[in-house]
Length: 241
Image (cartoon, rainbow, N blue to C red; front, top):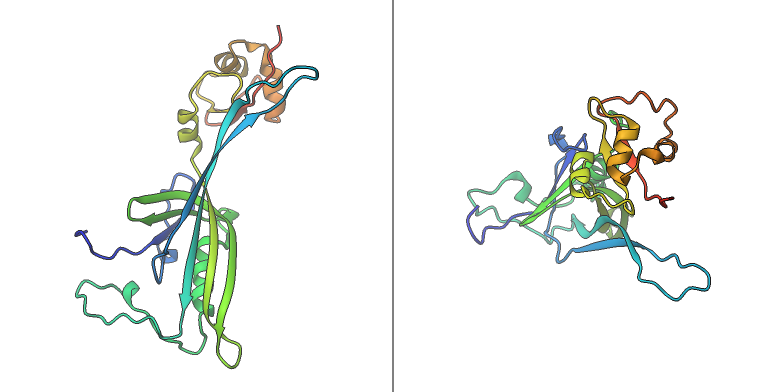
């Protein structure tokens, strides 16, 4: 893309958490690029303090998923017009006037992409938000639509959609980024051929005696038989002597 050329914000939809199965007919292209967006980065700390003790430094537990907030404009008033003088313009560059249904269809198409339940996977779609150097992988957690203008019969012709996304990382990438051996952190691991719960517990905590607590955290009944590819969580544990 040449420098200075307009690039519109695009939301691409995927069925799977590895972002390989794209649903191409649900791609959403913003009518107008947002004026701003915000990202929130959060960490979690333990603040426990024994009775009678002086204050201690908070102990880091984990990094929490990132939040991404946008506002999108939906408009069928005819005020926003593309003049079609760009020979490279796509259908996404054309802004249509009201065709009788206002912005109702526009909002429904947006909801199908980012909000509605995906029947194949029994959950909403995984989303990739692309704009400039932003490539945010996540899922929608909140959608608030404020209707601003109406036709005499009450049909909305302008609205602002406020959306909040939360970042999502597939299990393998999350485990790689959390690949340290501190027992004070939550760890995610995928079972490999030959792994046992006692062995995996020893790798994380330096001692295999916590394997029953790990089994309880994962609702594992038969801890002697793990399945390769199975994802396990190793929670922070208070180590005993």
